[in-house]
Image 1 (cartoon, helix red, strand yellow):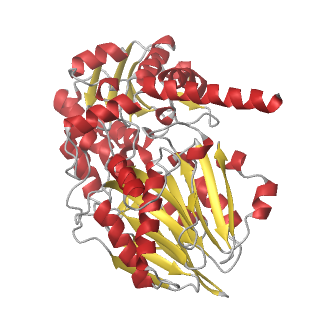
Image 2 (image 1 turned 90 degrees about the vertical axis):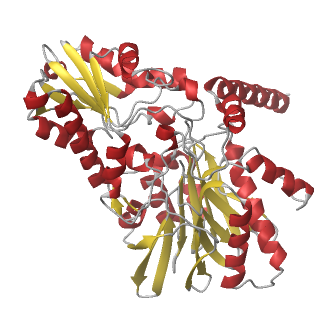
Image 3 (image 1 turned 120 degrees about the vertical axis):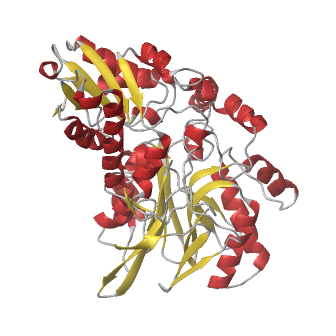
Length: 508
């Protein structure tokens, strides 16, 4: 879950890129980066931190040119080292930069092939650098002095033939143009749009439509599964489906949590899909307590993503809706924070309960999902500390029980609170009087109602079915060993130790 953007403009793109990346900040808060070009020279700035921290005035002044791509990073693998920040760059052929959202499931074998067959060296553990080098190699094999749109599309076709997993990417080829492409299943989102001014048409490619909205670009449509969108240096738009077999199966967790509610993804309003989640969830409660035979006094959302579902749920149950938690806007999203201890520390910093909304009441809390249970358990305790008599919880998503391999930080099954547990056992662990989950079929209907043409969704965290067809138990075991919280903390400690040695050496 990262955010990507690419712009071809008649004017300098640095401020537009900054604004777009800021709007996509919810998709990644670990690092940010931007490359721009005037068609001849490349300018790069990237580093750890939020967009506002990475790009200062002196950096913006150097990021000149009317072409640019940018990235906000949320780490699912590796470390938080700035070496992992994107966009990434290779100088052959032409000079190519790339920003990527997703995860390649065959990155290890691809990296071996790049070294052994393609004679390319990868400097980091990032699968994004692998994707960049595969694309660069495929483009180099065409041997075109000035590549044409068909050459670009042939290179993307080669990427689809070699790469597996989820990937939405934007790439800038210096002196040639900008290309965006999406994996053959369309798992990760990608849209493009245009804007007309006195100097002609400008184009933008981004993870979410909201990035286009704030810059005044008109949404043309989603990039189709397996499709590439190429905007040349002279501002001409070309599109082509480059994969032999495609199927639209977007990640359903985008609608549950990842995306901004004001975005449109694959012609589905994220906001409306979350309203429908609340309606379906209310029906689940009505099934349990017919004729309003419940003792719920108030419905309180867990901000922010639980809010949209909570509103129609409260209306259907004919129960008061109240805001019971005040959120500190300067604390990041706890779900995407690396390490359990950091997530635990951040919950109390992020939320504060309004006592009068809890005291002496039976409270139904509504959340978008329950992942590790750490955050939820602390929020339940906050409600009790504020005086709630009983605390219930309703999850707008089903129980998460299986690893995600497509770019969301859910790689280890035994880190899920729902792993091999019943609903009653989960309820006891997080400290509620009862909890209720959304049904998977209802969650799917919540999104599909917005676009009946969608044949299915990527729902592996709920149903253990992986749409790419290349995931087995051995792969999941390797993933678990490599990406658990313990392993991430170990890599961070090693990185910090190495950095200390470097600093001491420089000081000496």
